[in-house]
Image 1 (cartoon, one colour):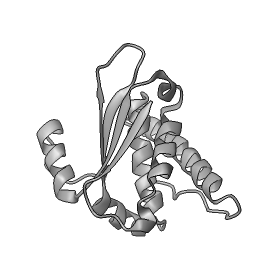
Image 2 (cartoon, helix red, strand yellow):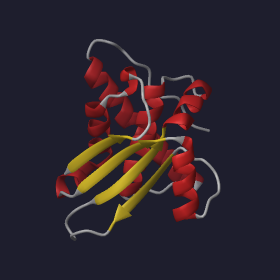
Image 3 (spheres, helix red, strand yellow):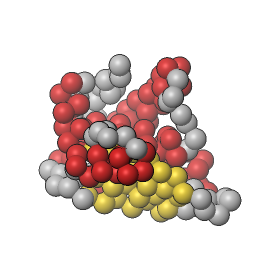
Image 4 (tube, one colour):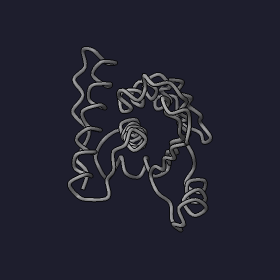
Amino acid sequence: MKINVFYNVKIPPAQRKTSLFKAAVSAALGRGAKRGGEINLVFVSGAEIHKINKQFLNHDYETDVISFGYPSEPETLSGDIFVCVKTAQKNALLYKQSVLEELLTYAVHGALHLAGMDDAAKKERALMDKAAMKIISKILNAKTKTAQIPPPAKRK
């Protein structure tokens, strides 16, 4: 599985953690990451995600993350995950966590969609949020080894 990370908007160096994002997306894809294919994780502005949301989903508003899976070989997984940095910056304050954790949350959420999870119903959303929190905590704790980082904030 090839995972590409693109920064189409300025992100401070403390939040520009390409290897962390790749590890998080790979973990969220689970077995799908072993099937091959290519995932593009693209960090975008509020205006850019609004445009994507309107053009492809007919939603006229800015959102946090959008993912698109693409038909590929039967045994592979390919898609794009668009993450809005502006929304992450706003929501990090709301959920009392770092912008990096918020960006990871969106990247993982998008990857979980590509892996087949859905969040249309409240119960499905709760399962998806729990899976995302587990992945992010594991990734952050593995990277910091000695530092204990609290789990990501629960979503409403």
